[in-house]
Length: 307
Length: 303
Image (cartoon, rainbow over all chains, first blue to last red; front, side, top):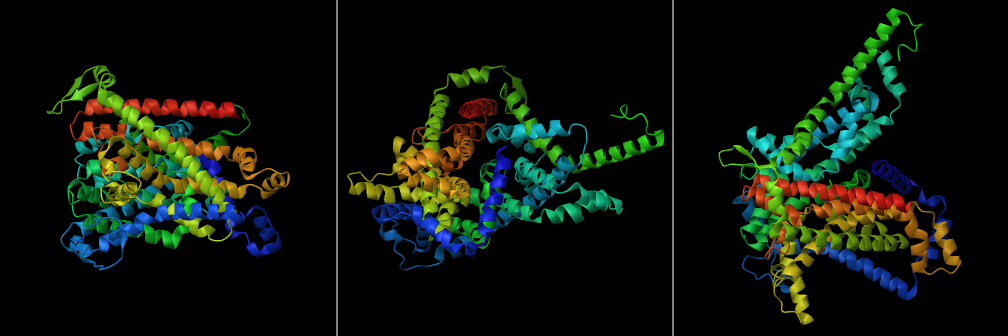
């Protein structure tokens, strides 16, 4: 219920964003003026907005500046936040002597491989659930939805023991395999594919197209927009994932960025180095946001979960 | 179905059956990867978790059945009750703060014309940031010499690290958790607000309703479905909180931030009490499912 209504919301937001603003400029301005704050109220309201903006963005500033300060500078407030005597020494050091490149590569493997298979499997299953009739379809789907209620911690221990029995601890496949079934993604894909008209599929069948061809040449191309948004979110979820890698991939060879930075914190590495590590780990996500902020916004509203 | 249409010739019926069977087979093949993975890595572990909670694994790997012993131990364990209450307090603090902050900001952002995109982006960025990575900065923010203790010193604080003092450490965790979620919640509320017709708000304004009355009687009732959705998912998230606690306090000082997720992790992966940890997991599941049912009942009554 929630998902369908949020998908609707996403559609409406998009419609709003695309709506040509010039179409009725006079009325729009008038509307804004009626409710826009004036006088002291405006001062108070802008102050709240700006303060909230500072609180949200300040940690990124602090991270950047303190990771660029020279080694040995005491990092006490407020002196540590002054951008002077900046140096890339900490970045160079963790890049050259630390395990940073390895963590970055592992995180990239974890994220890209998972995104590819999650999208492939979820759209396949979405197609099956939406357009095919087979025994047990409803029961299966019902089980999927019920699973959303189960907290992750319950499955964590058995999942770990299973992977451990299969010999997957500290391997890429052990890290990746259990994350490839994404219930929310499957649900969304089913939702989206249901809206594709059956006539398109029937027409292709009449032309003699096989199932695989229908799926790859008709369904997938039509799903492109939602695949882009969903893919971005699955990527974000894997890039930021912490608990599962912490449990199953502790060996330095397969360690990811989040668990690596957490270990630096625990081992009391110099703060500037740890912050440099965090900054490197965060950079790809922030850059992606700059280029695709709309997909992020849509995805947030659509998926209804953080990743 | 076929009995209802006895007129079709035998050849046609079997042909249609063949097509149906082929369709069904195709459907099964398409859902197969997800279904297999689902059974192995989701459904089976749920039952596995319940089973493990009824016993214990020896160092040799042998499983010993203990019945409800783990649950008895859990319910008489002070550490469990401590974690239970810490988690409840954390959730009860985080969810209302999140709702208040995100509604307030959404309303203010909607009212202003300029910079709306900037503010929306600025608030949203923390919610795509890993709290483990941001945690490195927040540890500094709340430690001695960082911003918060230093500023507290100006108003009479002692300048000690917040992360070393029980109540303040929990407050710090709450702050970071809110920081990491409010932008997302605000976005959902704002999306809904932008759908609402302005005419209602304006009409109320012309009738002499002040800002607060307009919000409470006009806007708020129309936000209910979204707020319900947010309360449900934020309660679920808060109840399972782990990352922030792990990086910022590790559950300390003296258990004051040791949420259930943290306790489970420690028991399972530091002490290797898999059976006991699984029992904590099952307890979390029971608590969360009953919470969801209660929330649903409240929602249904409200409509």
